[in-house]
Length: 81
Image (cartoon, rainbow, N blue to C red):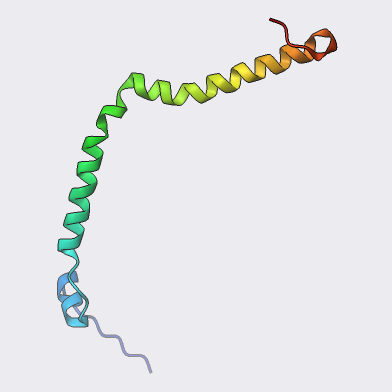
C-alpha cells in the first residue's frame, strides 16, 4: 500500500509548521556585510592592479626559467651575466 500526501504551502509556512527558525534576519546581515566587503575591495579590481597581481608571479617564474636554461647552456653550468 502506498499513500501520497501533497501539501501546498510556501517555504515560510513549512518552516513554521516544522518548528524551524526563521533565518532571514541573519541572512540579511551576512549579505549586507559581504556587500560592504566587496565594495571596500573594489579598488583592487583596477586593470593595472589585476595585471600586476596576475603577471608578477608568472614573470618571476619566466625569469627563473630563462636563467636555468642560460646556466644549462653555458660551459660549466655557470650563469652568464
